[in-house]
Figure 1 (cartoon, helix red, strand yellow):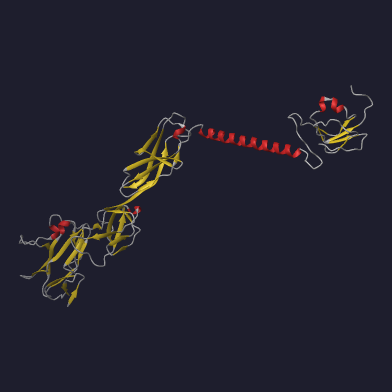
Figure 2 (cartoon, helix red, strand yellow):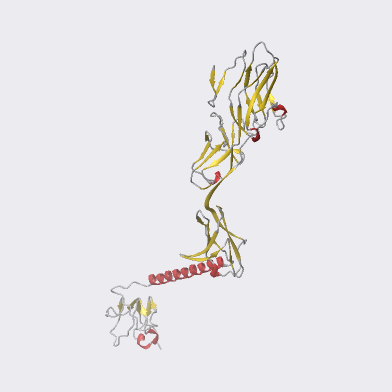
Length: 423
């Protein structure tokens, strides 16, 4: 009866009453440092008894069959798993690359000529290796990692496990491949793989380098507090980038004007003055791209006080102007309104006096008194006369006709005859 193993090799079902050796498979792909079990059964005539069993390595250069358990380099690594009759399963631990080759099982019976060797079993020892579509990629692109066995193919049902920096990765794998899509800077690291059940036998690590443009770019000022005039201050541009930043450029901004200052990761603002004020920023650049930092100011001692003093002076001047306007408005509002019966005419610069309720005893005194000239009155009445005379008076009654009109304005004047004569 024939059976097909997973490699597509034919083996035969055992018959215990005839000569023969039967394997579960005649070809094994084995991971280096792992353990391989070669399942085996054998048969012999029922009238004979098996006296010797051994596994040996096929070597056409040698005629004798040396028990593998006695071979140099195999001691303590080779074991017959069962002592039962008809069972010839072999185990090889800590498989080495040198173990790759052909092997046979052989047994001897108690009869003359009673010996038989089975077919050749091939062992191929392989390593796990990680390959990538690209070892260096730009952030945002796609990467595929493959866990390969270069010497032979493992069983189709093998399950692969992926590690990043010796820790299981968060990404899921499909068969023996791992897809990173899209890749980001956090995916940078060393990757290895293993077969489930043989996690202790991981592949050598392969490095993935994810590159990105500068980020987190900032300006550092190595000075605490305000800077005194005449001092110097050092500015440093810091940035996170892969590959590292290869060019730093410094700029100063004053209003809408931007000035190029120079290059280098550090920039010194020497001999600080008020002309040094402004906003400073840097630009970090690598092979992937560039980034501008936020602008920082250089605080100069006293600069803030001067600014506040100027603002204070402007406020005081504005208040004084406002008070002056209010005072002028009040003065204008206190002057009497000019009506049809009140006419105020200013002849000279010093004729701005106004007298209310002035009582003049004799109108003739106004002609002889110099102090009456250029005087304005609110209301004038001349006692002893009911005759009103037209003139520059608000309400004037004069007792008799005046021979000479004085250019005098009166607001309100009452004339009464004095008991005594003016001197």
